[in-house]
Length: 429
Image (tube, rainbow, N blue to C red; front, side):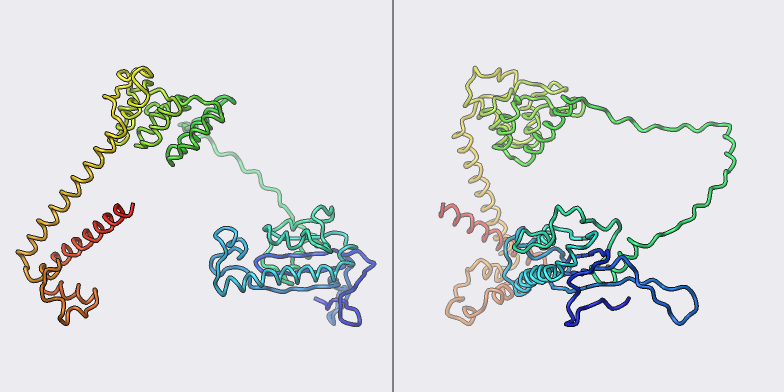
């Protein structure tokens, strides 16, 4: 490639009367730009033959700044916008280099402005908002305009922005390629076999009208909100789209088990959604599915079933035919919470009793080790053991125990620690 033509002071030409094009690539911190004349320069080598045609590069420039995150991709600014600004040395360097790259590119474009303004076409590759904002601003003294009719993209895949890649792209754009296509020889068709093959046709995709498409969209949106337990968004969706809470899912043959939002919430075990649909969206609990089962009969856990009973208590007996809905006797919210609290305490009591029994069994198997483990060693304080770290104390307690006994002892420690944390949280609240 011949050397570009420069002024006497070494700067690029400020004007060129012949036709020329401007080419630019930017991405990943790499930048390459070039102004090439469309009139090739004819040269002749020592070898005999016709004259060679070489491109005349009027100006070219490449530089690179470290702006992308290694092995992760993406610019630092994009990562800051997504996750918040990082405060590492690398992130600070990348932010500085991003701004330096912007300043360098805009300074170069301003320097080449006479050549760019007189260019026949502008071939530009700049992917991403950051790179396009670097070129097209807006900023003071902007050189390139996004609505310039001369701007073109590269109609083929390009690699990293380098001088060689720009020259390769220029050759692809300006050289004619001739490809000879040989006609195919006509081959005789093979004789059909005596037994014709049966071709199985794929089932045709059902075509829906506009009303069915809308119902299909509502079905997918409602089910997604129920799966994620988004009760406020679900109620808002019903209100904004003027949909009844007992809306039947579409297509019906694919939702025979859970045809409504209340059925679907019951199968998901979402007590909050069930309560909201019954008390705030006026969903009908008496609607049966294709199997004749109501939403209550699909509830898989007691929390979901209690939500129906609490709703019956709050709505009253005259709102719905609760017997047809198969919902049992009403249950007040206070009674449900009291029962849950009582059962929680009973479970804690049973767990404490189980741990006590387990400790007694371990004490019988290894009295010295377990006594030390539960903190019954009277001579621990005031001795050398008091200076031990917790890790050293645990190692000493586990000496002489079998691996199975060590695992049991560790489980007991963790259970006591979890119980202490729960008591602290209840005391703080």
